[in-house]
Image (cartoon, rainbow, N blue to C red):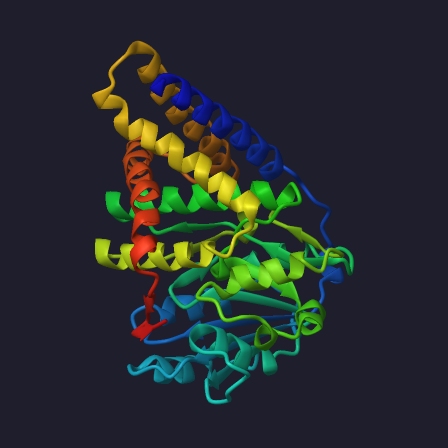
Length: 364
């Protein structure tokens, strides 16, 4: 009986992975450099004195037509020297603007309020967001915005990896690439399941049409909230190209405690998914439960199914790493597989008893 359940689960897992792969390899037309619209890049920063300098430097090095880019740094009531660092860096750079979160907008709070404050000062036709602990590729803005080839393209998302200075960090990077490839594949097949705000862009006119963040129910994952509100309009294209020019590199969590908080925040946001999202999560959960039970129910067929699931993930990820010009290490992948099993099994039970989220010193 167990073997049959495992076989069915892995079969569904294989089918959805094939579909995600089909979506992730999709390509889209792009604008020429002289056709690029104006863009406003927004970074919400709270207590980021250790990271903000690298982020600012990478933003300053962006290749984009002069006079068409605005970079807004929102100091979200930092208690450290983030604001001073930003002011010193941008004092002689006209394309930068610093905003301090002061204005209350609807019932917004936290990072969402900071971003909304930044958008109110934005002049660009396209809004782009990243995080203060991220470094963007030189062609990031140009690559992302080049996909806005028509007025019906509302959202363009990009891939994010993480700095790989240790096995713990590399494991998180594989996790990022895996989850975002699933997001890319599903989105490009017409069914958005998730996105990440540290590499996201959207058309300002569509944001205004929705009513902005103030018109949306509060969520700890504001990026996903906006994504789904746009999708529900049912008249715009939302795309997720896997393009190395649009790559963002973020700073990994330094401890298991901070990683736990990150995963919990994302999972709480994921509870707002629709039936398709829950089916994908259920398939992954049953598959990983079966993998965890394999050592206790030893048989050749079960071991083969276990190995097949690992091969599915490997051949799902390897082409994406090649396309992004990243090195895919077998050791890091195997560590990720073990970690993947654990968090897929543990997180649902955590959410049964506790859905409170703590982020940047704030509790939701």
